[in-house]
Length: 222
Image (cartoon, rainbow, N blue to C red; front, side, top):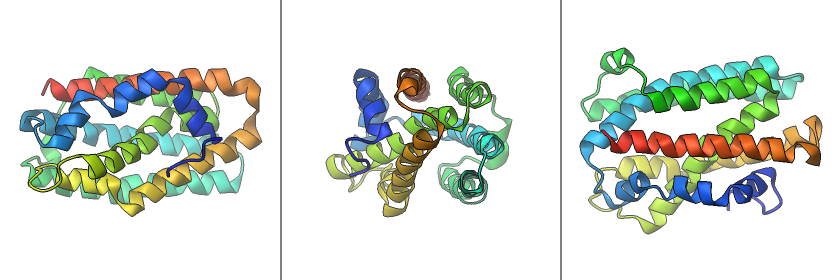
């Protein structure tokens, strides 16, 4: 189980239940799980995800700046280091298996959907505090863990051309990353507000979730 029923993440997820379902059960996700997603769609997604990760790293740098204690700074610094040094390297290596070079990906213009979500996350951090920023990041971090676990248990694994992608997000390492994010949200809420902030946080979470679904839409148009 990724999260306790009384965690902030669980409550945010429930508050936007329909949008969350549309995101994690999107046609892109279902086709990926069945291995029927057109390769052109997956390649388009991979290229835009490379560009997305660059801004994700920027968001963690912003989280460090917005943090007011050493624990939060260290958490943000570790996230930045993981994305820039580990996730990006693995992503580039994986994309190479699909015939995509880093040079070509870096030269590709950002899709409107990529710009919409990444800039929304950064704006949430600029306009709000580190809790607002992490709530905007959560649909991606925790959502991918939920999707990976779901596809690993219900999708077609044998002979699926997207098996490596599914297994990466279903892996124990990534599931642990998602659980840490859920716990970090609870710690931030305890230190940076109370129930009076919930409606605002739910609005941020809902918009980020809808922008994630739009990112899948972009992939399907590949």
